[in-house]
Length: 119
Image (cartoon, rainbow, N blue to C red):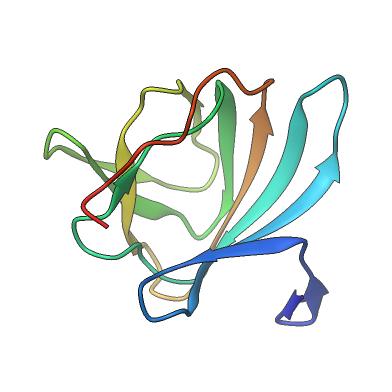
């Protein structure tokens, strides 16, 4: 699969079948995974999810705004680093530049199921 000339390993999308997130697996050491994420649009309104493992995210370019499951909003700009626990419920609400956002994800071994709400 390719997007913008780069080959990606998978994508996640929305109800209309269009990609919202492209994923490139860079390295898989000891049950962990290092991935490059390219967001190209927001998640569907009201569609929240959790993650299967603890992760560190590093926003590289663009940035995004996320809506948390409790209704709060957070902005992620380039250079911002954060820890994402498995119970962290959120959705990508929009891209800061309206085009794309690139981030590096370093995810530990899977410890939980992904929960999806509102989709």
